[in-house]
Image (cartoon, rainbow, N blue to C red; front, side):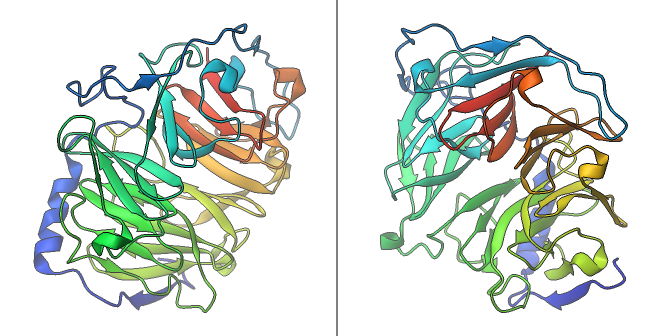
Amino acid sequence: MLSRAETQPCPVALDTVDRDRLALIHHPRVPDGCDPGSGGPTPSSPPATTAPPATTAPPTTAAPTTPSPTAASGTAIPGTWSLLTTADGTCTDSPALIGASFIAEGTTICSPSGTPGPMAPTAWTTRTVPEGSGATAAVRFPPGGGLVVATDDGPCIEGLGMPGTWDCHPAASGFPYTDISGLASLGIDAIYVLPDSVAHVPDILSTPGTAWSLPTVTGVAGAAPTRIAVIEEPAPEVWTGTNGHGVVVLDIGTGSTTRHTTADGLPSGDVRDLATGSSDPKFGAGLPVWAATAAGVARWDGTSWTVFTTAEGLPSNDVHAIAVTADGVPWVATAGGPASFDGSAWYGYGSADGVTAEVTDDDATAWGVWFATPGDGLLVFVAS
C-alpha cells in the first residue's frame, strides 16, 4: 500500500450476496468488436444496415517504416497506417471511441463488418440507439454477449431479448443512473461513470436495487471522474481517474477506497485515461495499470508508480488517452501524436510514418489500434 494513500469506507457496503457473486467474474468474456450477424455472439439477429461500398478509391495507406531510434526514442512497430472517413463507410469523421471496435456520432454507432484481418476495416454496419442524444461507451457483456451502450439518458442493451431489439433504462423509467459518460464490465457487473460519482451495479441484467455508488469520488470537493479501468487480479478493483485529484481505487470485495496522488508518484493529478495490462479477455484484466495524465504516462506495478515523459520518448507530456493491445503493448494519443512503448522507451509516429492527423483518443481493438481525430476521420494502425 502506498505510504501516503488515503483510505476511506464507501458510503454503502456490499452485502454478503454481492460478495459471493464476485466468484462469477472469471468466466470467459465475449470480446468487444464482435458484431451481431457477422460471426458475433447473437447470430440470430437480423443483419444490421450496412453502409454501401465506397465509390471512391480505397483509403490511402503508408508503407511500414522503421526510423532509426534515437537515444530518447523507442523502436517503431512495423505496420500500416490508414485514415478512414465517411467515404469509406464510417459513420463520422469526428469519432468518439465509445468501446473497442465501436465509434459513434450522436446516437448512431458503427462497427466493422466481417472478420478482423491484416488490414484496416473495409465495410461497416450501423445501428441507432433509441434513447438519449448521444452514445458515450459500448461494451459487450456476458452471458449472451449483448451490446450495452451508455448514453446521456441511461443504458441500452441490444440482443438480450428478441433479436434486433433494445432494452433501455432511461430516466423516465426510474433508472437511477442516467448521465453516463463511461462504462466497463466486471464479469456480469457493470461500472458506470456518472457526473460526480462511480456506480457499481452487481448484475447488468437486473434492476440495480442493490447498487452502490460513491457520492464524492475522492472525498475532495470538486472532484469528478474521468475514465475507469477494472482489474480482476490480484483482486477485483475499479480504478477511477479524476480531473485533478489523482486516481481512486475501489476495492469491490471490501468496499473501501484508496487514493493515489502526485505525492504517491503520479506525474499529475489530472488523470485523463486508464488501462490495464492486457485487453485480451482470456487473460483477465490485471496489472500493471497505466495512467495517461497531463504530465506524462505512469505505470503502477502493484507497489509503485514509474513515470514516463518526453525524456523516455513521448512526443508530448500532454497525454489524452492510453490503450493496451492484447499482447500487452501500450499506445497513447498525445498532443504530439500517437506513440507506442517497446518496454523501455516510447516511439512517436509522425509524417515519416505516414501519420499526419491530430489524435485525441485511442483504443485497442481486434481490428488494430484506433485513434480518434477532431475531424479527419478514424486513424487505424495494423501491425504487420
